[in-house]
Image 1 (tube, helix red, strand yellow):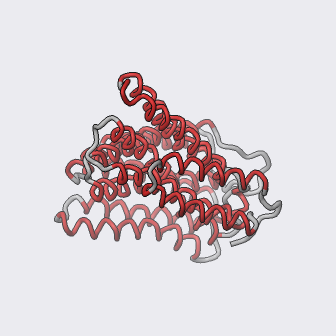
Image 2 (cartoon, rainbow, N blue to C red; image 1 turned 90 degrees about the vertical axis):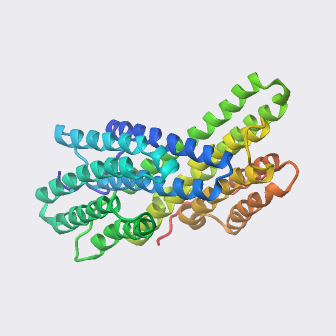
Image 3 (tube, helix red, strand yellow; image 1 turned 90 degrees about the horizontal axis):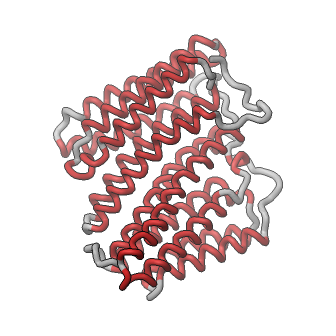
Length: 379
């Protein structure tokens, strides 16, 4: 398990990495379904906070494995077994998502999370034995992750009010481990820009697929709700248009130009938390919109519209900030963030979802006529 060549030609995602992503689809789907339920019941604050908390576990575990794999991936039996063990942990986390939303009970999710992270510790220790040139940094990762898991287990024994504060502190500790590890001494982990950005792009496609499922659900509901047939068909069509626009915007810039330094790679990786979370929440928002149309929601029409437009705006602004703006001209850098802000204002308009689709299509039209720059920029 020696460090991979960061300039290795033709490096692409492996079938194991694609298999690994599948279990995260399950976890994201359950988290989005629980968010949909909470929003429909008008438990907005509780639903959003619970969603952001469980999504951290999903995103952080996925991201840590992905950056490890781009630097040290091998394909022997032990690497495969440890990866599959992490997949098992993800499924346990997924099983514990409902208790988090219903009772703020993190027991099952923390058990699954620790299983994932212990397997990750084993991967880092194995990498530390294989190469002296990265031994200190890999050992620091292993030690930092181990301390974090002790902290997460201790969360189960803290009073509820104290646990809320502790959760935020433990998240900060987890996120500080890569920052300190890569900056101390003269050792760093090598990442492959094309490979790592391909992995992020593939996971984004999975998350956008959840929105396409929501679009299909609108049609399914329309079959049973004949009185609401036109608005449900409209929601389905508009969801497809918006999802396609999100895909177009995400893949417009050359993402590998966005991680040319440690600072830029850190920004790229961490801001993707909001991009990924927004993509998952968008599908929940569409389901909420369907519930309002079929009179199964306690939310007002305006609040339901915000459940759709807020994730869209966060997604677009996130990608603009980390990947698009450095490769765009002044026109694109004006249109994209302005379009995202206008989307946020759509719920106060009589036909908000339709206006959102028009705005997203307009952003795409600008991107079509103004292609990205051919050279990347640094941090």
